Amino acid sequence: MTDTPVRITVSGRERALLRAVAAGRCQFRGGCEPVLLVDGLACADWSVARRLVESGLVETPDPRVPLAPARLTEAGSALLTTG
Image (cartoon, rainbow, N blue to C red; front, top):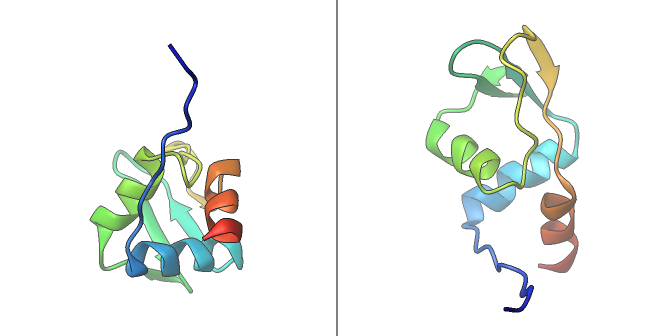
């Protein structure tokens, strides 16, 4: 068994959202289903935001925190710098 890194493919829309997170333009509004805000507005494509969290590119938000900055994981940062 080898430890081959998993390659994650992202769409243009997902890459744009990752760039917005990296630029500090995104926050998560807490709750049972956290909402990603971009420039203070709810992200219209909630499935993209969910996929980025589930794929480990954006840190999982704490649902108990009312409003917190969205942050890239190491994998998310690496994807932006290499691709």
